[in-house]
Amino acid sequence: MALNKVEICGVNTAKLPILTNEEKELLFEKIKEGDKEAREVYIKGNLRLVLSVIKRFASSNENADDLFQIGCIGLIKAIDNFDTTLNVKFSTYAVPMIIGEIRRYLRDNNAIRVSRSLRDIAYKAIYSKESYVKTHLKEPTIMEIASDIGIDKEEIVYALDAIQSPMSLYEPVYTEGGDALYVMDQVSDKKNKEENWVEKLALQDAMNRLNDREQFIIKLRFFEGKTQMEVAREIGISQAQVSRLEKNALKSMKTYLRP
Image 1 (cartoon, rainbow, N blue to C red):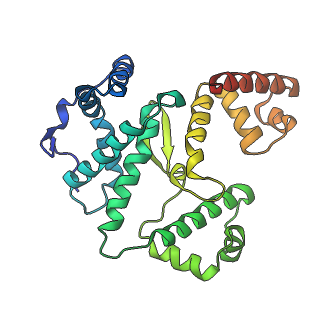
Image 2 (cartoon, helix red, strand yellow):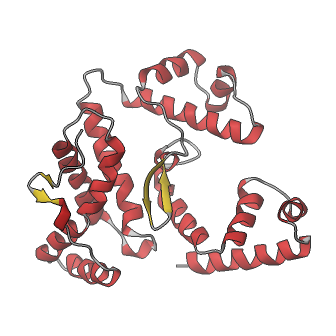
């Protein structure tokens, strides 16, 4: 798939406009009022987002023009459904929509079609494996994965064989301003329901507002389950300092997340 060409679907990608944050906010106010011209300007101002996403599918044999058109459908859906009161960047909201639209297109046009339920089983198994490795520092057995997600091991093996391109859940699919969006953000299971993903993205935005040391402490304490004493030993400060930094970080995040 050729993604380095200048023109895609009649659009000169070298001349795509770039909107400032102020312009985006103003345009969205007009879009809410039904201004179709503002909607067109906003779409054109975010076509670079579609280009960035379809690069993720460079290894597919699909025509770049086709993927661009499908990506634009996802972009338009994101614009029509975006809620500015969620306190998340539009790109953070739009990227999963664009990726989802492209993945549905690829699935429906694949000569060897894999059912949605089979893909869900495969991604749940991958999620379980990644979580197990992170916790136990070793690979789980199929039986352990089956026990974790409550699915027969035969179905798991079949599902993993059915998907053509397994990948790490921590592989970045899009990055803007240092904020990466990972495959894991697209996985849905009983612990990661679709209706909760916006809240998790908002939490990540709140995390990104902390300084490096505060982020590291929060990750060690609440994502890796370490005690304040263990954190203190790891970063070379006192337990009291860890406690103070942790409280300040949580207060900052709470203030940012408060509606």
